[in-house]
Length: 323
Ligand code: TXA
Ligand code: MG
Figure 1 (tube, rainbow, N blue to C red):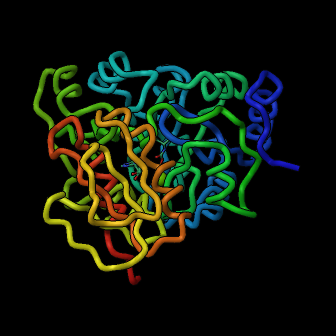
Figure 2: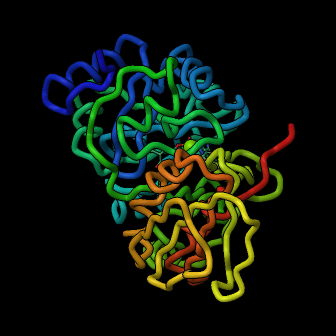
């Protein structure tokens, strides 16, 4: 019997009761599927880390159904309020100073917590039905490709997978933007669908990209992340392409022909950043299972709207960590 269960009213009740009783559930959001648990239950959150194989040094984000719920979790300051008003529900995680009710494994021992109101009807209904803040990192094994369908959750977590609420394919397709407003310098810790320009316009101030050197707390900042098992390479100059004579798969976005090279499998994603992001992880996963030696990726335009996609692609091609 499948551990994937339908995203209907009964499914919502089941997901909420699993969370209330301290168990895990695979939860759809508009970005990627989350591995969800009661964010106020230390043991339940510890189970998230175990199932993901996630280093304890990486904090998990907490999902909320309202600003009031976020306010209980920490210092939801003026900037946080503006960002929530502008972008919630949506793909923006706001890092604030954490209150004492947040378990230490949620914050990875730090002083801050990331909070987000997801823009997905099922996620919001489960949050309402459980009346609990829900901790949920992406529902993949650490370093793997984030799942954008219920099947991908089960494929990534295998025998460790909890029951998964089926919400269909995620529309955004890549993880939320993470913005830190916990001190006076606002920083984007992870690019996503909400762009730097949009945040600057909402806050009416300039912000920085990247964490301060004293904080090493975003696994999204680890170099190899969101990666397929098959080695992948990014091709910048489509005319001067030289690849070893192996079995190759191609991830493209343009219609440029490549008659000189034979690809076992080709996937062409839409040529706009949000369409591309929406299909990215499913495409990478499919090419990863095509039995090739290498995945060749046509580099998208190096322009602002493509920032989040380029970030994920650069991580996908990073060499395997040896530690
Ligand atoms: O779209 C998303 O954010 C998805 C869905 C499920 O909501 N979740 C997700 O979670 O991608 P995860 O754990 O895979 O990534 C959360 C990111 C990580 O880069 C983490 O380090 C960062 O948010 N983060 C969480 N809490 C933080 C904190 N207190 N300070 C800095 N970064 C934090
Ligand atoms: Mg993740």
